[in-house]
Image 1: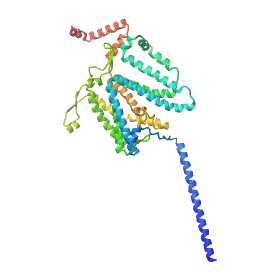
Image 2: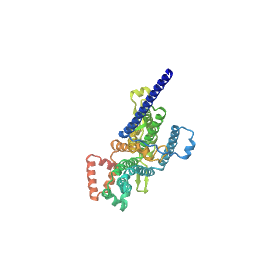
Image 3: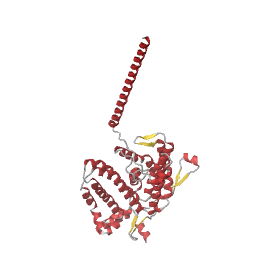
Length: 435
């Protein structure tokens, strides 16, 4: 009996302990379940968009060649190979000349516009807004007509005045543009036009000043992108900004110094060639576009005195540089410090729409817009920089405007200018020199 009681007591005690353990397990499951719900709710409530993983768009040839590598090194090689391919294509279009470069800029503009409009359409489509894509492309045509119509009139005045249809379009250009613009309004399209078309128009303007104002800035952005990636890949430890988790301080600083050195070296090489420094002009005699001029002082070698600190280190008292090389330091600094924020803005834009890339046009790189997000911001800076510090009065444009005046107005300006030069004592000297 005593043994039975002891066994019964032990059985009862073990049953109670088992019940308690089951209760604790159920409590812990409930707690985990509640925690899981609260985590999910916090994720929903936080409003942080989750970026879906895009499908693998790597070409099959590269997939087979790099099949034995980890995803990290595979991505490194894919990006490297396609970067070299894009740089080679860039050199090829430079060889083809400024007019081909302008056509390429227009093509890039259209592709970037299409990528952004596609994102907007996926959002607005849910609201059943009619004619969204049709109106978007129509506005692209209108804005390009407005911007490039004025540019053609400004730079190729002689050609425009020679053709009657072009002269009429030039005379009433702004009225025609405004009439086309009033045909409709679309908010998303306006934002896209502001980001894409306006910036590409500024790139064309920079090209007209000389290809060096296009090649050096765009190369500095490319160099900074590559070197920041390389330094970040091998040495990156400290995150730079939350919008781009892969950006690091090590990559940012390494890219900055590399781009400064690269900009100075590239500027030195290109400043010695008229093909790169001369603006594009239309030759009325040969009826063709040409790139030939007497390089300005900006592209003439000059001696600069070194600061005493550098003089004591190098032993040199002066250094021979092109003035453009000094300007290239400002361009390189902007490309390295401020330029990446164009990419940060694009990252925030994509994250807001829960996408990783604007498109999958270039494997490992995303869409065309993903490659040109920094370039557009750089183009705006270069255009403002030229207008503020480089461009002066242009005699050829003044003559073009004078030729567009009536004969009596031209005579009035001629007599006023003659009286002004005579008063300053310059005209007799000029007449004697001519005699």
